Length: 162
Image (cartoon, rainbow, N blue to C red; front, side, top):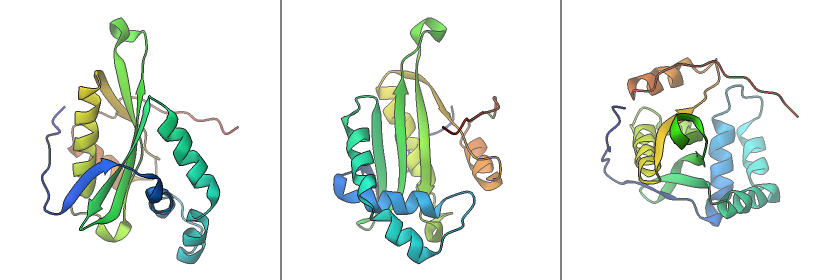
């Protein structure tokens, strides 16, 4: 993997705190592959109590860590790392990156690169031997971004809505 730590002035990647939940939800909704809601609808939805419940559930799991990126003290990005134990390759642990989002107004400033580098370092320190992620097929710019960071587009993904 060719990802190295990225040092950006005024950008800090840290574990999310409960008070970040609404902002994290807003970032995820703003980054939806297919946007059908207005900014006002997204802002109202991000305040729903279910996001605090979900935040608490993620935080209670020893296998999940939610990170945020701050720029000048404001949360501008988020991603979740899930550590997955398994039996493949003599029990190699995997880290799955989920919900990688940067404020749309700040894309192109290497914030996402700093977040992914932080997540990869975290995965390595946590004993993971592989980092994986999925990305919506329509997100061509995101695919270029991940390939530029050294990720190999090696699998087809499948989902089943329940």
